Image (cartoon, rainbow, N blue to C red; front, side):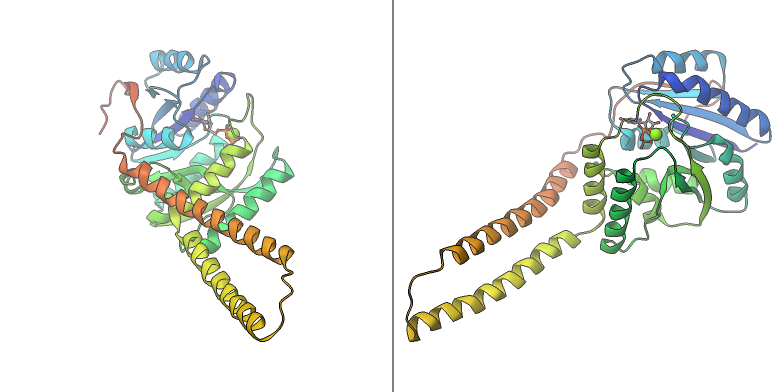
Length: 315
Ligand code: UDP
Ligand code: MG
């Protein structure tokens, strides 16, 4: 019997877990041709999340969990989970029920047809502000333009991965992770299914604009050196115009009278160049920071406890 692992990163999700667990239980009940594993990754929750998961694991042999040693963020929680899933396929799903588990049977169906990565694409984004929609749309456009890899629009981490796709993603050990990009990067056979994304069932989102901005920068910087190129182009263009301007100044001073005016234009040039230099330094800094992070050979995460399914040891 084939085994499907459901991977659930959970951070302070005590309000929704019961609801999620029931929907997952129903999923397993309705699909008895498959064995299921519900792998919860407790990402350093400060509420009762871990206790609740342990309660499930004690009474239900489908449940396994990893307790990370502290909060590492969803990106790391996902790789921790993927490292530990034991199924022939894995479905990554948010704990807050924004990703309906009812879509999973359809994913499994396509997986059986031979697709390696069946991902759910949002048709609507209920419960998200227009600002979040706008920023995400701009971000996708920029990322798409700047990288060679086709990035999937309006797609989250909610997807089914075949074992070989899991193994491919877990080979990527970047420390500043942008998992969504990796799904595109690995290639393999992809299938898109559409769904309506629900608002959070309960609890609060862990995202804010600072985190989103960070993720956007991680996404761009980890996939392309185009911004470095931009700094180079800016440098070349500005140097060219500066050079022309200098010649103009020299000629004017030598052959025509010079009344020493020009404070405003000087300030304009200084300020402009200062801005461009700071921008370029910032861009270069992003990449150097990345080199710094990658060169520290630290583990991505630490596991405080791993509870495997009773009948199954990890691969
Ligand atoms: N999450 C996590 N670690 C974190 C933040 C979030 O594992 O540091 C989990 C969270 O429990 C949920 C998923 O990642 O299962 C998505 O988080 P959230 O719903 O807050 O993000 P949003 O849906 O608003 O993008
Ligand atoms: Mg959510």
